[in-house]
Amino acid sequence: MEEFVDIQCPYCGQTFEVTVDTSVARQIFTTDCEVCCRPMEILAECAGGEVVSVEARSE
Image (cartoon, rainbow, N blue to C red; front, side, top):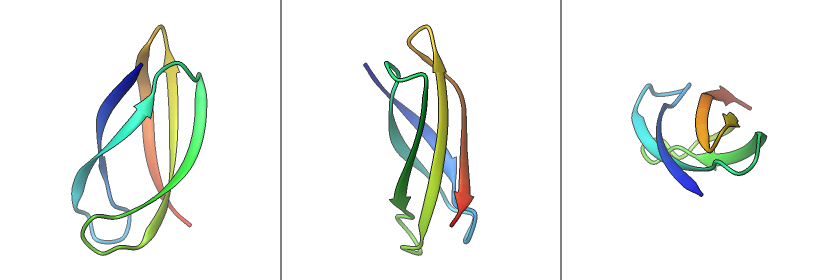
């Protein structure tokens, strides 16, 4: 199952949505900011089909 989660870009501070697969307990993936286009690493932890935590980090 997928869930939409708001994250904040560590570079420009803009908030936007990313999709997290809640069937995976711990995942790390890279995405680009929708505003400044800089790449960031997303760390998401899920349990019971829900997102427990999500963090955006600069690469």
